[in-house]
Length: 65
Image (cartoon, rainbow, N blue to C red; front, side, top):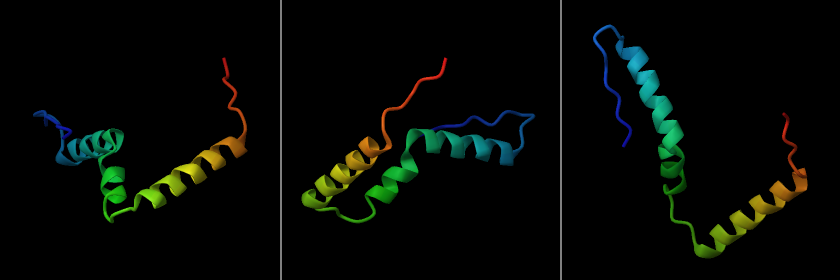
């Protein structure tokens, strides 16, 4: 669980914004959405296969220097 320490000179809104950002980076909300309903193993395989197909369809990624 992400944790945020509120400093004396910091507003609550600023600390809440930092907390939300830490939760987003930790992937808590996406994990909750994913586990909201039970997903059968066949559905999970199909979703992963479709994601892989979409990823390969985009083509190779180029790295800029």
